[in-house]
Image 1 (tube, one colour):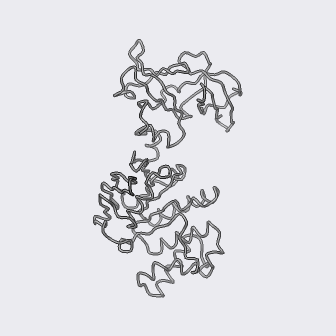
Image 2 (spheres, one colour):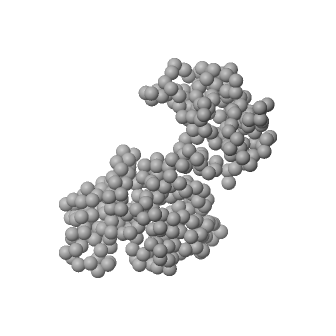
Image 3 (cartoon, one colour):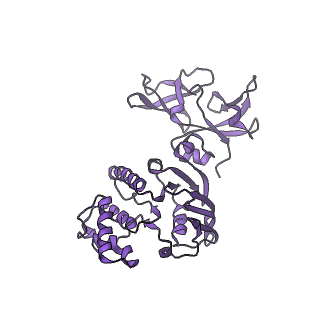
Length: 357
């Protein structure tokens, strides 16, 4: 393992910011901490960097306990959300800052800075004032500064959040390619799931200071561990239902809006018949059928968006309840009555109705 967190806990006054966080990163792996604002992900990053000390737990890197070491002694690279560039220093001196702190000679510093600026596509801009740079260029300077020390671990705290959407997408691609090329282990913090999916080998989803699930983007999307992960990662429709058994013994979710969906046995383990459940389904696993189709949830098409091979529909199925359905391109129009069903063999997710903790 490259980085290993063992039972990290951190409290600020009465607020538990991080609660029993344990996770391990392999060398060269790109892992993202994903979660809503205030979930504790930046605090975890600061505990790793050494800017905060844990109340409990340990931080290990490359088999060594670094919990008591200063940020400088750990030698990790960090890119902050606000870039934290020094306005009184030009681009070259900003990138060289960490190298000078390590006592490197001037010749070696010049070579390392130029190489770092080339890596982030900013060659020959060393003499430029940082205030004269665009937001995207400043972000690249901050990344070049972190890479210049050739860190064994790169920590990134929402460094793309200040960029416009187009530049953010472009920079994501470049960042992932650069980290992969250099073979650096990276831990990235974001609340943006698209960003997390684009960049990550694995994603660690956090809520209220706790890790809810760690896995590949595919695993989080298709096999969420709980209702929070299912609703937070990707788009998911949620319908409350009562769990019943059909006459043939097959579990069935019966909806207050009308209709019922047959479920797989493994989806309802641990849930007793008669219990309330939350049924979550991705838009692409649903389809439109006739409103009177047996088992279909009846509703009215609110609007439709043609997207080439498929069309996205919003279907109102009850007061304040709208389902998103991605179906094959068709001729269903807004205002038409339809039914909504899962596709044959499609997987929906079933969680206890009260599971929102």
